[in-house]
Length: 73
Image (cartoon, rainbow, N blue to C red; front, side, top):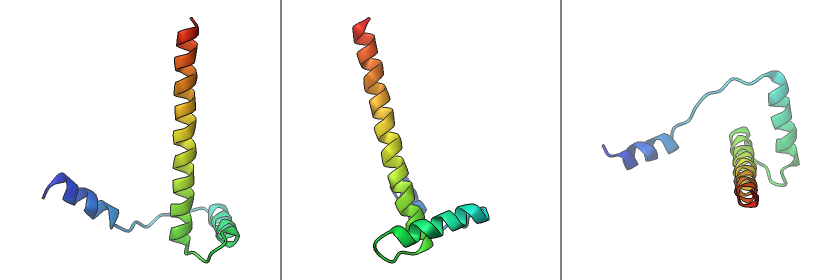
């Protein structure tokens, strides 16, 4: 099996997780706010994608600030 096959296999895997009651209730609130009916796993995927976008944007902005600071010296 090649690396690509292993990556595809991981994409299709389902995982069980444990959440605190408060986190579960928060997810249920978010699930109700999303304009379409989605499952809890879909809500978690949605939040993960949003979180990653924010993290990547922040890292990019920090990287650009560091480059600008270096140029200013």
